[in-house]
Amino acid sequence: MASELSGRSVAVLATDGVEQVELTQPVKALRDAGAQVHVVSPRSGTIQGWNHHDRGDPIPVDQPLGQANPERYDALVLPGGVINPDQLRTDPKAVQFVRHFVETGKPIAAICHGPWMLIEADGVRGRRVTSWPSLRTDLRNAGARWVDEEVVTDQGIVTSRSPKDLPAFCRKMVEEFREGAHAARRQDAGAANDAARTAGRPTGGAHRAARP
Image 1 (tube, helix red, strand yellow):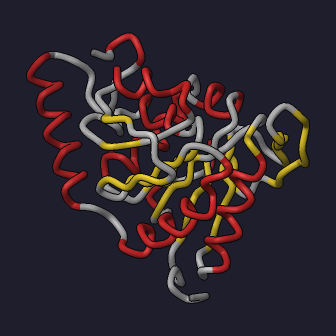
Image 2 (tube, helix red, strand yellow):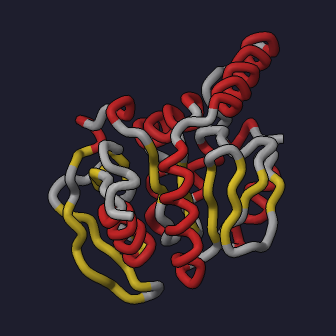
């Protein structure tokens, strides 16, 4: 329905190298459902989309990351493409932006290589997820239960493997975004931070070097 996400604001975090269709199709699905959607990026103006190995179209940026307040958004989309999340996960502001959604229990939809950002924000520990197959070991090392399915949902975190899964991904994304934040995830994030303090580790997420 065109109004099921009316009044909801959604951030799509991306940069150069994003898999174009993994950004444009979710954005269309969200806007068709009535959501306000902003493409948020460390770059201003436009970012360069890709169609697998081929250069795609420039994609307008709605909000520079340095000016984006995650508190104003109700949900987050993390598209893939190898280059896109590989750049973002080395950007502390991008990781902190994602961490807000992890710690507040707001719904997140990540596809293909997008779950790399969830690893950086310590958002997959104990969660059942899927991804592009090459991320399987990374996700398992970060504490996730990786499965090979077209779309997986665990407490408001929606994940899919590749562009071929986009129809199922977009349907489940809209459904989860309509339901809103998950209190259980907020509690889990609080417990994880308490445990980190007790162990003398930094709170709010684990970096690659700290993975089990």
